[in-house]
Length: 98
Image: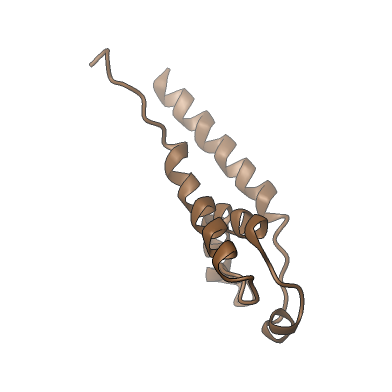
């Protein structure tokens, strides 16, 4: 039963990642430097989709993990929180039965 639960959790995580990856847009670097500036909430989103962005960047050179044109500290903070969220998905259950 634990294997089935782990498999379902993995499939759900992959599905959620695909949904978030669909939100990621690709902009040329020149446009990023003069276009929209990304802040805290975009940092959270970009941090959360980092694993998906990384895999996509292996196959497409137009995909970036980190927004170049950001607001500085707040974007970095959001990115850090978003990418750190993957550790929380692992959980911290007590092992009372072992």
